[in-house]
Length: 118
Image (tube, rainbow, N blue to C red):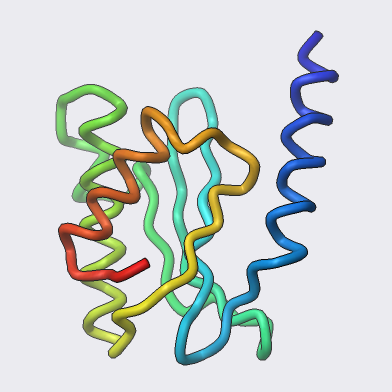
């Protein structure tokens, strides 16, 4: 059963990535969601480099108590602060095949609250 679910997500991910690409002016905000953690990074696909990254395993975030949605929102805000310091304000959101719901939506809302536009 899980093999079918992961294959479905990968098909959706390929369909999304066919249309979304990051540049230095507008990088791609890519996320990965595991059962316990959430990871986000800004990627410049033209040069193939990660501009900045943030996850729920960082020292400042891992000590905070709360639900996974609250932590995802905090990860989004932290990533947005790092991006603003780099001079990035507009990004392309890549949900990587996950539904725009729950932790994914919470991370996106946190990034918007931190100053990113998408």
